[in-house]
Image 1 (cartoon, helix red, strand yellow):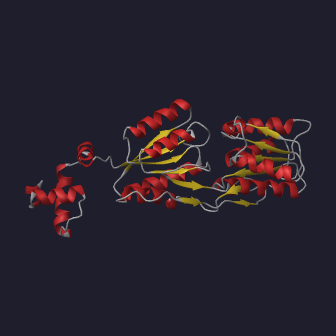
Image 2 (spheres, one colour):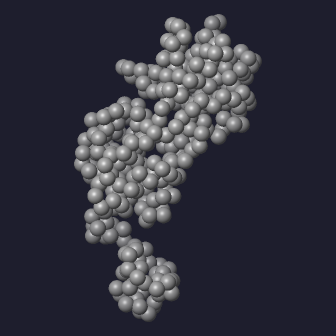
Image 3 (spheres, helix red, strand yellow):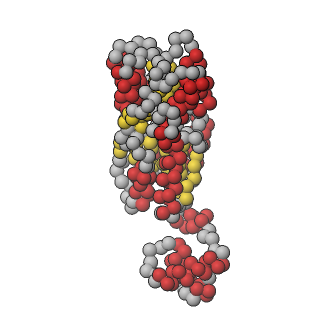
Length: 326
């Protein structure tokens, strides 16, 4: 390759390794042209052994696919990783066994850092704390307290969800059903979205609690909403823990001949774009814009720092957005 580009072997090494050495633009281009002509591909495994780095980051999610906010997070991570010469590997944590496997993979050096967004209790606090204690650069999206040694991104979802239920109560709704994620139903204590809903009901002296599962996928949400709205004492509002579930609830109400919001008001969580094209448009709780570059940048700041920076915490704003469904 050096002979084809008419440069020294050292110059080829500087260009292809990305080292910060002064190489003229014309010379650099000759090396790159020669590499393409010869079909050269860098040996990442050998490079990793030399540098003791993988040039990979890991995205840890609860599941693969179907969650718009996760898809946006993954997109922003991939784009920033590409710009910095990193690749991305993903791990799904949907059970205790998968959680342990993910921790073992990260402890084993599968990646140089991790961006973690896992709902539910599978990735327990002690597992995360133990992983952070190893010094692995980490950013965790979580409202749990007591995470040290990593950056934490929080959302005030409890307050925003309470605001949504306050709105439903202010419009005269009293039988408000909460359609929960599976992990919310089986938790020992109320947290997050369900806590916000319950807090608002208690504040207004509403003692009845209607809590069901169904928010994890569209089909389950449709079936659950159909059962709720077919009962003699049907709810006059459904607050779903995800926008996807709320949109399915709108479909269920329509198919039962009910009007939204006349017969039943419906509110979701997430503020996904699909809510703008539902009929009526979906009232929702969530961020006003979906952009995770600030979150992703935290991880690469840690990766590229000579000394580990102090743990940081950022809060991403959430709000209630009223539209036609309520």
